[in-house]
Image (cartoon, rainbow, N blue to C red; front, side):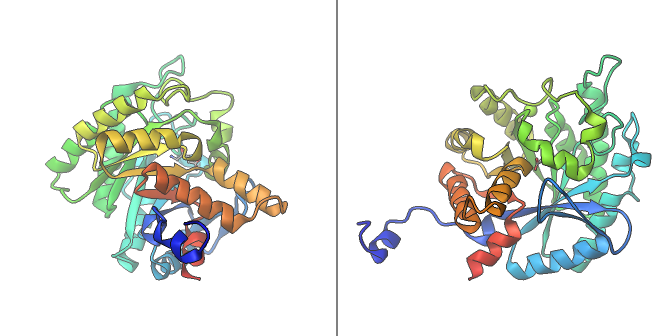
Length: 319
Ligand SMILES: NCC(=O)CCC(=O)O
Ligand SMILES: [Mg+2]
């Protein structure tokens, strides 16, 4: 069966299409400015006007959705993260500009406080630095409402607090925001593969030597991921996510087999950086390896993949 191309094609089980891609982007305040992210070659922080050009290209390529991540200036960070729900903030302005120009392009926003806290944690903290669950959830609800009111199609809580999906769902319902979808970062592991992302959004310096072990998941755990996903579905998530991607494909498979709900995986910044570095050194064939990694996600059961390679992949698939 493997001898001929036609029979290889006949027995091929999985196929990657542009419909599977979500493109994460870093948004910068200001005008006509881009900044390279040194640990993520090829990735740029972009001001809204430049991002509109990128979005136009994504629409042309057929990419279904963008995920927005703001780069927030130091002067907008605080202990109470109040900039997270400022209706005039960078994220609501970006959502409005994108939805106005490209109503058909899905816009996903990150719901978490790390871009807005002076300490770089995803939530509000007590005197010992411990993240306070319920106090944080109250702020996340305001942030999610702010994004939904600005026109976000999907709000994506990535903070890992308990009970935030239910609280956000109830708040959306009571405000009449009945079409806003929730993509829950349900099984988000406390991973070192997020390093380059923290450079990109400028939170690594604020985070310093502290970590997120007391709310993100232990990489040693697998059953716990099912419990987290079950809770989020019960609370009203429309879509669930496993993050990071490639080291956690077993989790993607278990989640998909168990719950059979729309399941996404995030090929995170560290995975991108590894592939990019090897490609730049001539050690790996970039296109072949990236496409192979994507098929791995599909084989594991992912319905879609968040990847910094989304535009490259969409172009490769067109060729
Ligand atoms: N909420 C987004 C992240 O925490 C990190 C993603 C990445 O490392 O690419
Ligand atoms: Mg949870």
